[in-house]
Image (tube, helix red, strand yellow):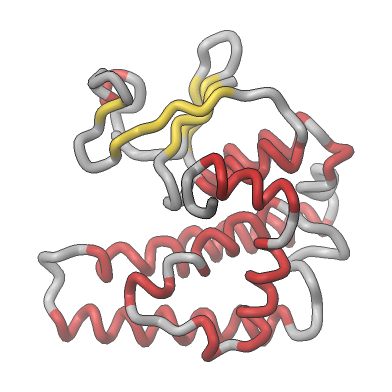
Amino acid sequence: MKLYYSPGVCSLSPHICLREAGLDFELVKVDIKAHTLDGGADYFQFNPNGYVPMLELAHGERITEGPAIVQYIADLAPESRLAPPPGSLDRTRLQSWLNFIGTELHKGYSPLFNPEANREFKQWQKQRLSDRYSWVAKQLGGREYLVGEAFSCADAYLFTTLGWMGFVGLDLATWPNLKAYRERIAARPRVQDTLRAEGLIK
């Protein structure tokens, strides 16, 4: 398998999951601004949408969209417990979290990174994102993970979005349990391996 990624962006989530699952894979770095691969190849020829992540399977099929990719990875290695069994209520809870993170958190950053978005709208969006994180902090309560008693692919996704806060002026310390949660996830050996592989830590 090949994971098309760019350091620190949403492709970090499936990258973490691949390492947590213990699967063999190859990393293919994408310049998401120029839409090129290392060496200059046009990434649009591989993924017409031009963004990451994308997972290319051994037989050539390509899967896009992070929440779909991480569940596929989890189902390849059920012993990793990255996702509850298909059809279970906990699997539905996992899918609910993946959808919430994707639509309410991940996409909430888009206008904040957009230089053409006006200041008033950015301030409104920043407050909306802050409110969403307050809700997440409340849902986590004293729990270690989002679903059940095990680290899941939803945790990899939430961890990824928490890492973007400083770039948009949000202070993770505002939510002590989210800060502790991120530090706990960051300390996982496979997460450390992922961060090193992407050049995010030494």
